[in-house]
Length: 134
Ligand code: 5GP
Ligand code: ZN
Image (cartoon, rainbow, N blue to C red; front, side, top):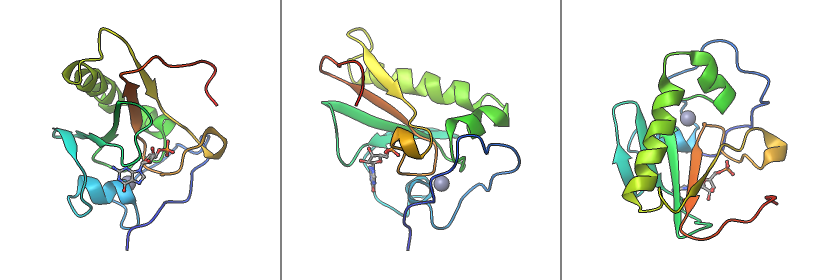
């Protein structure tokens, strides 16, 4: 049964990460075991609609491999973070919000509101955003 990972501390990003973690919900989506509405199906990155959308467009962009946080992904140093951000922009363009603007959010660690311990970029748009965030 796949559930939620323990939420990682943003500081803990050294070392090796497993490609797929059995108890990780988003590894389950990447492996095709957990259903999701995919909007992008790449070799190293996928994107799917958030089950609880906070804006007209709310898509999550993730690496197929398991990294707990964006810092861990940056630490991998193999261009995967760049690729993920480029794909996030592609998603925004495909959703018609690249020109009007969108928000790209990596909640990182417990106090940020991160609830799934597999790094994911939220692509949010289709309405004016407020600042500061809650
Ligand atoms: P976080 O709070 O970690 O930044 O974002 C996790 C996001 O995952 C939330 O916006 C939540 O709605 C979404 N989410 C949680 N469970 C599922 C699921 O089973 N399927 C999909 N598509 N999204 C999910
Ligand atoms: Zn995972």
